[in-house]
Image (cartoon, rainbow, N blue to C red; front, side, top):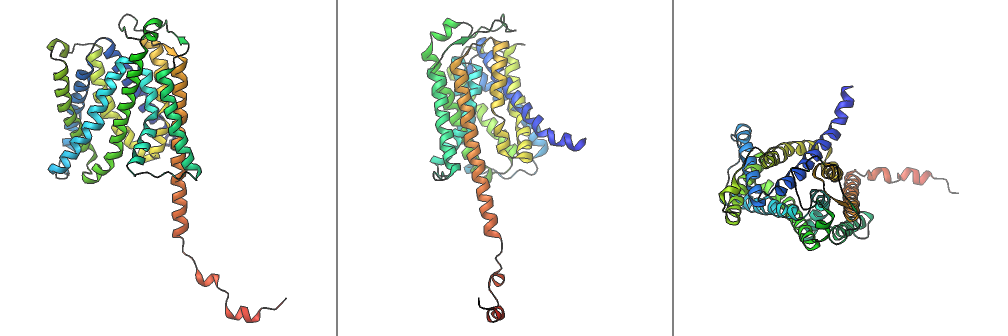
Length: 365
């Protein structure tokens, strides 16, 4: 019984991770819909994450922390600026123009974007003559098609009349007319969403080199959150100087920033690291489409978002593209392991040679 539970645990954990991300998409959209400034939202989110991580980091890793030189510190700062500050601010603006379900849908393009960026930086290789390489190229093309479909095609609408927070949230997607009349804003939001994922993908690609310079992962995460808090504050104060807008009450705004800071940045960091250790990064990436499914249903019933055929079809294309890239990557890794195994096996040359006595005693036909 215990063995069976241990086998199921990684599957239950990845479902929990995707549910946490679903909550992030929904709560961040809800906070924007009630009028919270997106730049202030990012600052508070990162500040709470920093305050949450600092005591944990001091307790667990401060004594064994490697020395931090100016060069390494600058690399961590730039990594934080590109992958966290820029990514989160672009996403927060994009979600104002679009919807929570679009944010979850475009998240499926992240593996393809990351692979494409790694390809441009010559950290990945595509062998177009092999099936794995064809699958990668096909996946990237399908993802691009999915993004185009999300941005430029709407189709029939399915409007929700059963959302629970009808009296509390009044977003841009509450009516057929408001959604269809502002297509330029929607396209702008799609573009910003993909740009946000591109910054996040670049962060994934560049983080490997920084981790080698500074292997303390928890302290590295805390430093990035700290740097991001400072830069996000500068951006927010330059964009919004009305102090009334900075006040947080006991409402959805406070719940959103606390949830994103503690649950998303703090809890999912540990859970994702645990899943990768147990089942590998491909297993974690394969669970990404669950967020899209959870978010579509939740945003439909909780936020009253309008679901269109274009968003559903675009999301499906992104999922297909994601699995194509992951399948190609997984097949390529298996081919490399098999090739290394064949090359490492010792060849018994003596066993391959025919002894002279057998040659002399061999009876001619």
